[in-house]
Amino acid sequence: MTSLDLGVIGNCQISSLIDGNGAMVWTCLPRFDGDPVFCRLLRSDQGPVAPGYFEVEMEDFESSEQCYLENTPILETVLRDTHGNAVAITDFAPRYEHLGRIFKPIMLLRGLRPVTGQPRIRVRLRPAYDYGMNACEVTHGSNHIRYVAPGLVLRLTTDASLTYVVEERFFVLDRELHLILGPDESIPESVVESYRSHFNETERYWRGWVRGLAIPFEWQSAVIRAAISLKLCTYEDTGAVVAAITTSIPEAPNSGRNWDYRYCWLRDSYYVVHALNRLGATKTMEAYLRYIVNVSTDARGGPLQPVYSVTGRAVLTEREVTSLDGYRGMGPVRVGNQAYEQTQNDVYGAVILAATRYFFDQRLLRSGLDALFERLEHLGERAVALYNEPDAGLWEYRGRKRVHTYSSIMCWAGCDHLTRIAAHLNRPKRAIYWGRKAAAIHRHVCEQAWDDEQKSFTEAFGHPELDASLLTIHDLGFLARDDPRFVSTIEAIEKRLRRGKHMFRYGAADDFGEPENAFNICTFWYIDALATVGRTDEARDLFENMLRCRTSLGLLSEDLDPQTQEPWGNFPQTYSMAGIINAAVRLSRTWEDVL
Image (cartoon, rainbow, N blue to C red):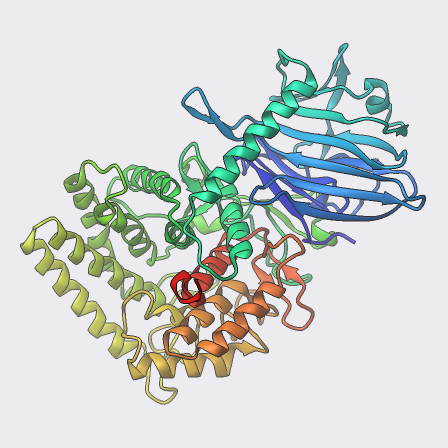
């Protein structure tokens, strides 16, 4: 049965999801939001006829095992048969410095190595196009195979028998073989030389990148894997950060909550960049800052959308495709996301908060601070105008609008940060101006969002429902850690929304009924809130439990069944992986305490 126990490889241009048997089941080209050439993940028919996968099949297969090479996204899958034979598959996408820039081609490399005995395997490479509707046309030359689709030509260069690959015949693997799938360009050196060069340089790059991270003492492997996974979800060309690599993995079985997450949500990206910055990954932060500056400039003073494409394109028209029946047959499969049309007023604060570090972090190459501040002031004015206006909220309700407390608090946070930026730039009049705006919003939120009967802030002004996003109100600076209102809000939310060791985002029915699964980032927000108010032992216990809920390769999706611990929702979810980093940094003992 299809599952989300998947490995992810990539190079910040493309990515590929690989199942436990070493099959590439989801790969979009030429970037994250492109047409999937491998789409088996969203096809219930797993037979060999339907196109959209790249697998190495072992005769008399019995079992498999997977691991990442230490401190890299290079994935190794070992297949074993019933006779004691074994073969290792090594998968990666090249990424390294070359000629003064990062080399990140649209290329996937597979190495095949006999481990024991004489394994018999066959290679099945069946790219698709138009969301799995059609198989590519196949042609071949003397040393390569070409897969042709409208607007796309892929070339497989290999030292394996082309006949065996084209005819999908079993053969004995008695030596190392290499498969390089990429653009329709000839490779100047031998296949083995090209493979080994890409492998060695990619391994060196990632291990060097990890060595530059400032990781906490505890949970180092979990933090490193989370950091690498977040890095793989960045589209380096523009600086965008995608919410996930997939589309239409349902949040719960047959729920219809199937969304395309291959885009850049400004809110989500703030949390991701904030997490990576805690580890010292400043280049990712710099690139994202360039992205949001360009997006906000393109808005020309008008409203900001909550989500944009990785290129910054604004229109993300949502449609359903019928060529794929969905994860485990649980459609629909959606392309695009209607959320781009929604009003989500928290986005102004999210952009200002993300940009604030640009003014204070001296590691960054900063220029044009006054001009950037003036752009941010335009966003601040919109926050002031909209903080008490109804919106769809961060959970993107499609059937209702309210004045959501989280949105209002994020508008306050934007004004509060403008106050700090203005003071830092020695602009006292602007600091006073934004300080007054922030104070007025703060008073209004405290008056309208506080429910004295529940002793809690609520999801929306004048409504009693609770919302897990309010666990962040101290982290955003809205309330002090010892403020009784913060403490009692935590207590109210855990009574209503906690299920076992997991947290739901809300409990009331929405456009699709009542939520069925826990939302992983909310559990991490809860962990952070508990640690903030001194309930550290409880926070550590919940965090350890979340680490046990990761997949076998250390990844998390968006949602989790609180009973079975099965992952649901798009994968890997950057919100969730950022939660691992933030919780580990907060909860870990320091190096000084231990050494």
